[in-house]
Each structure stands twice: as structure tokens, then as C-alpha cells.
Length: 239
Ligand code: GLP
Image 1 (tube, rainbow, N blue to C red):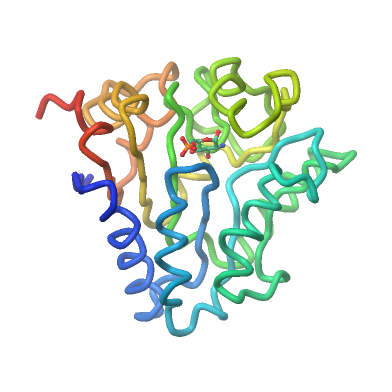
Image 2: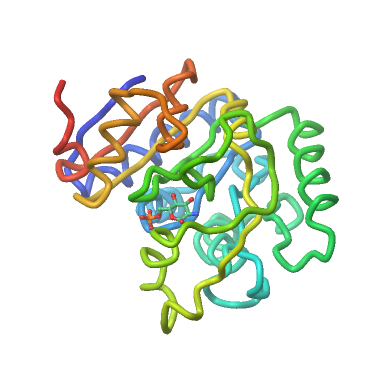
């Protein structure tokens, strides 16, 4: 695991450079994207100077809410469209987000996994982290070998994400999410965290111990993880 502690303002540029170099050297053909506030500056920096050949990249998003439509501004469909697909000029057909409106979650999740496999697997997965240590929407207690599935949101997550909605009552209770096992199959992982609220989760993700109580700690089992942190997110590290 490589850990870089950077000025908050430098994280976007650094993350974009890692992704740009990967795409331009043809190493990244399939990119996994995360939503949430932390990776936003990376997408903005990428959009300011799109990588050569980005139009050939397939994109898979980590998760989606259940119960709000894809046209809802807080859906991850909308976030991916706004922050990634449109600014990078990607063909929407090459960008796959789980369908939170499906009536058959099992079939949708199985189809999603099959599409990742058919694309050759994810070359680089961008990840944020919840204050409770979740990755995608794999909440505390999630099985480390879990696959893409319908899941319930932790109340901590609902409260954390309420800032994006009118009120806590409007925050969905369920989601579709890639599993921890799915995420760990990506060839390379880029984890981004900013702010003191992430410090505790980041410490365990980097220093261990591995535990179901902190899903990001399973990243310790992955051979190629780069972590970009600001000073606040790094503030609880002991080494
Ligand atoms: C959401 C997403 C996660 C994301 C997390 C952190 O709940 N499902 O994929 O990593 O929030 O978001 P933020 O970066 O806004 O703190």
C-alpha cells in the first residue's frame, strides 16, 4: 500500500495524473468510478485536461441508491453523468451504473458482474471511504467475499449523506452496491479521503486490523493500493 499525504488542493491533480498516465499508456481500459465528495476534484482535474484515448475507456460505477430514479439529481446516475460522462465527453453507452429502479435486483446485479467480466475486469478502481469505513455501500458487517447485491444503508451513512438531500427522511434506506469481493478483483485501487471525519476509518484501513466492522480494512488484502489523503484524513495514522 502506498500512502501519499498531500495538500487538499493537490489531491485532485495527483489522482488525475495517476489515471491519465494509466489511460495514455493503455494500461487502463476499464475504469471503476466512485461518487461522493472526495473524488470530485480528481474528476474536475481530469475534465480540465482529458486523457488521450479516454473515449475508448469503459466505466463502471460502484453503487446506486434504490428508491430514487436515475433522473433524481442525487442519484449516482446523475452524479456520474454530471461529473464524469459529460465533462469527459464519454459515450453514455460505455458508462454503466447499477439500475436502482430495477424490479429484479438479483438479475441486475448478476448482469452487472457479467458485464465487468466481459470487459476484462476493472483495471483501476477509484474509491472513497465512509466515516464508518464503508467502501461503495458495503457497510460494517459486510462479508469480505460479497458480490454485487441489494443492501441496506447503515444509519451512519444515511446521516452522513443527508447533507445532499432535503432531510434525513429523504435519504434512501437501500442501495445496489458492488461487493467487497468484486472491488478487490480490480487490478489496482486508488483510495481518496479528505477531512478529519475519515481519520479513524483511514487509520484502520491502512494499519489494520482487518475486521468486518471496518469494510475498508479488507483493502489490506489487495496487492496494489494507492491512498491519497489530506492532512486531516491522515491525522490518526501512527506510522
Ligand atoms: C457514499 C458512497 C461511497 C463514498 C462515500 C464517501 O456513501 N456510496 O462510495 O465513498 O459516500 O463519500 P464522501 O467522499 O462524500 O465523503
